Amino acid sequence: MSVKVTQIEGGKFKAESEGLEVISGRVTPEAPAEGMSPGRLMAASLGLCTGMHVVGYMNRHGIPYRGFELTVEQTNAENPRRCGALTVTISVHADLTEKQRKGLMADANKCYVGNTLRGSPAINLSLKAEP
Image (cartoon, rainbow, N blue to C red; front, side, top):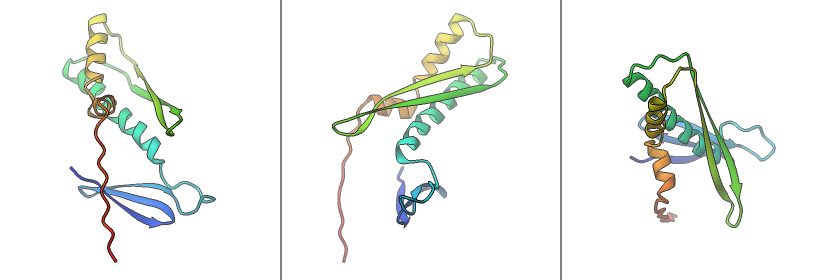
């Protein structure tokens, strides 16, 4: 899997993969944001991935529910500036047994994005300078 990121204008960027795109940033610091910041996109990715696992668990086990909502709270850290913690709160409108609660949480913890963030992946940077 790869994602291509290009500058649109100023501080506004586009990320593309498999025909889909996401806009992030703003043309100038004074301009309104035209998409989530990269940090918010990271939190959104965790929430979306976790949500897919939660709903998948409910559907696979035939658990009736009247709605689903998930919130990701992000806490920043310094030196270097980064995300220090992500807290995911899952709200499912359903009557769950204790076994179902444990199963749902186990499935929620199988999220690819969450597993990646917990695993401290290697980040390799390279630079191509072309005249």
